Length: 166
Image (tube, rainbow, N blue to C red; front, side, top):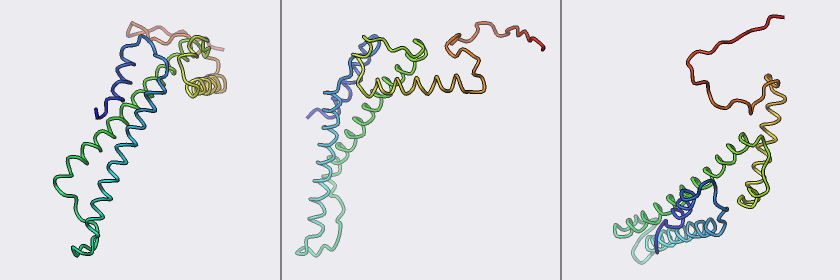
């Protein structure tokens, strides 16, 4: 078994793409399944150890410490679980960051070709994020500002501000 490889493949796919590749639901599900397999292996090891610890013929009356030869195996499974979780979180966080940036670039208009690249949950997130940003821009204390106007800071250190007195 190639531990933690599925999560890394998801991140490599993101790195190779120009913008966002199509949402890879099969790889995400496979990574989650790998996490579940590692978790089941850990539970089996702990249960087997507890059975040995609770064996009345040896006089054990509780949970025995994990044998030294099983600790590396448990550590390997735990590290694989954590790595896959980090990869999944990084995969989804990168996609969400791209969607947030897209909202400000397009002023909330999601083009049809982009919808085919995104999952249904990502399209829902984009629309909800757009509603939230629009509501804040319209109803906030600075509702008269165009939030999409100038997103880059000025190149000069000092700017001239003119104030009109009423």
